[in-house]
Image (cartoon, rainbow, N blue to C red; front, top):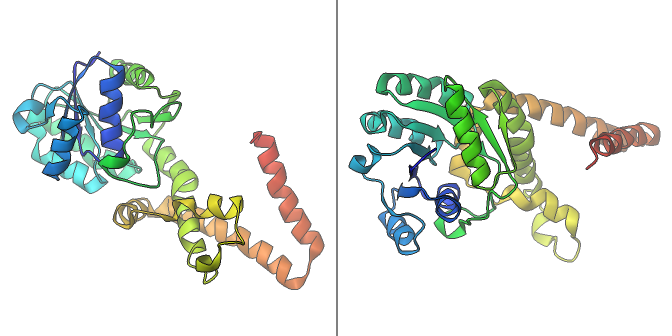
Length: 277
């Protein structure tokens, strides 16, 4: 399947990927990061076998670009010659923006590009938060672009080896619309929620509901600004719907309209019950 895998970017996702591959496969794992101290840490704890130098990249079968979207594109443009013949995957949370650009780079440099998105994470980021069990049971989203079916099958099999629960094949458009709803919108909601003046005084008054809604407000603002802007249309569509739904509940509460309020709340409960969650 794959013998040598390179991880570019050893943050939470990249380092967890490296550790998982090392723990669950016989692949040789190369890795690099803009912070040389992180590379040395990865070598010392055996998360990687060797540093992914430009020369070493020339012999890799599979490359995971675990970088911000724009940085992933820049890396592929600058190291395209070394990536020739490899399967190259970015793991970012947006796909339309990067697939449009990366496909052209892949074609010009002779590598196969596949967009992937491991649906796993933590509130904390960086190498020290990485975990070889991070992907256990998670979904592995795959946006094939122009990749042959054989490459798609190999990647799906590889994801299974790493402990992912299932591979979901989708398009860039569908990926970004669904991620706007399942990931980006909750982050917006959490960030808006904790800006209430009540937030610093929540101790003693909060339980599970506060934790559930506020959890992802501990955000990497640089990364998420890039993700929000590169997926602005689907995100804003979801925000418009959320604002509309919140406004309906607010208006019913403000006017004392108990019947409308019960109807709106009942609708939400029934949606969740039908989903079996």
